[in-house]
Length: 133
Image (tube, rainbow, N blue to C red; front, side, top):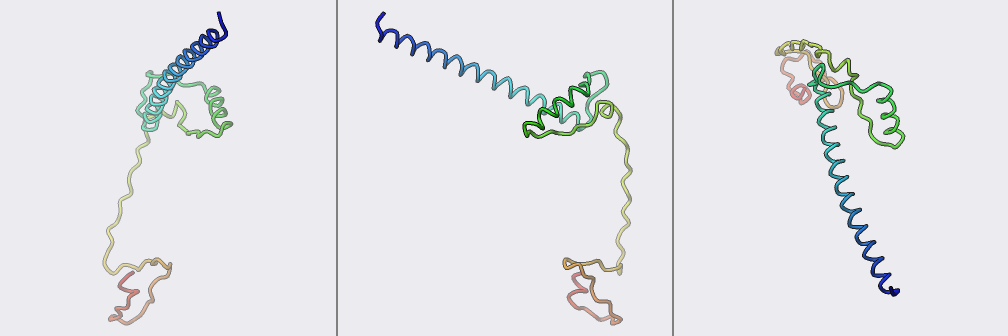
């Protein structure tokens, strides 16, 4: 085998290795993308409390702490999700406050400058501050 044959064989081997590495990287990227999407969907379900009892096993707290520390050490965002026990509780029912309708002639509120309009005894005072506020 001559030197040129050895160089050609080496180049062919390197080319094949680079091609295999590229394919492996593409496959890993696809798997990583699918995993990220699945994780994103699970996080959304957890936030909206669509996780039922018995469907999933909760991640142990020491493992969650380790994962949180890993992400924080690398400067990655750490999303705070509720604890597993809190996810299985039914959401608290919060009654919405009943708003009282505004009545005409109610007290003036402060405008953009933070000042209230001047108070006057004159019933025919139609200055800008009275109209705008």
